[in-house]
Image (cartoon, rainbow, N blue to C red):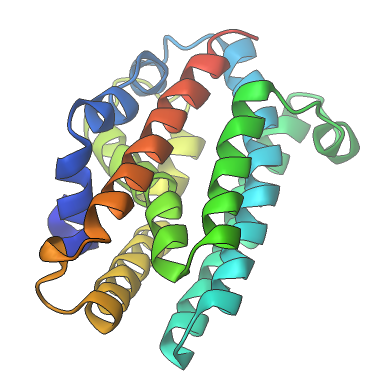
Length: 224
């Protein structure tokens, strides 16, 4: 899906098989056809809620790392999408299943979750905005890509609420905004010939590692 910007497309291509393993994981395909066990889905949602708490903090860190007002605006807008939309989706679905918001917040963080969230935060703490965005982008755009595909291909309504959130106009707009931010941030810091920059390979590796951690996150969802 090229609608998320040129830099994202280049990073995604560089990730190779890892991107396919992430966006077409067995967990994802189970969402599409409704075969994913409900217990596995709720287990994933609880862990993902904890993940989103840390992910929101990482996007707040992007405000600190920003060099322009435009970068700050997109970072702030993404934090709002995470807190006001994604986390509310998790709360709503879990409450319908009898899991209170207090229980959801008290979920014990799995090691796979811990590894991913701390990797993203460390990328931001030790690097600049580009390093942070390379670690953040697989989750943001990957869910947008997954949501759009599943909305077009799904054969069951069981997980329609989840799919609809990530396929929806608001989330897709957030993905495009982050893609534009990434393109502009790369151009500002590395120039038009960014793939020739000595920093490019490191950014690609960060993106791929985050993608591989996404694969592990889905796999965690299958093992409550």
